[in-house]
Length: 179
Ligand code: 5GP
Ligand code: MG
Ligand code: MG
Image (cartoon, rainbow, N blue to C red; front, side):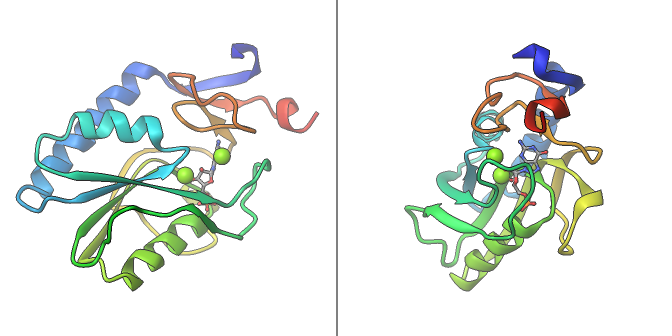
């Protein structure tokens, strides 16, 4: 598995530090608001767990699964809700927890859905961002790390459902997906 990694961008320790920092900021900013924290499955599941563990105010969690890539490494532009939320978002302060923003298509679709359901506010927290690859204009409210334009895996992010369990974020060797 490690043989397939070209370069480690941020190791487990660096990620934990950043996640704690973001959790602290969210704790301050959402104090007294009981936010609904939404994990975008599957990529954000590890980030979500580490993040909420370090937020020290009352909150609720929910999960949503969205598909946009299939087995490819590029966004198809087609976004589909595979698993919807259990809770209504009307009148709630929602925080979307995302793994990575690339083209921005997935997130702009999701923000749109939550706004149409009359969320009181929609906030985006992403651990990783590839700002150079946007096709729609969009910026997260909380961003962990900006990454170069490369396909990355680990810390929840997959290629063809593999590599999610790596504790770091790294660049996948291109010959793994384009042999
Ligand atoms: P977007 O719609 O912004 O192009 O991409 C959204 C989703 O595609 C992300 O939430 C993530 O699940 C996946 N994605 C984007 N870039 C990468 C990447 O470099 N590596 C992996 N594993 N997934 C990515
Ligand atoms: Mg995602
Ligand atoms: Mg994926």
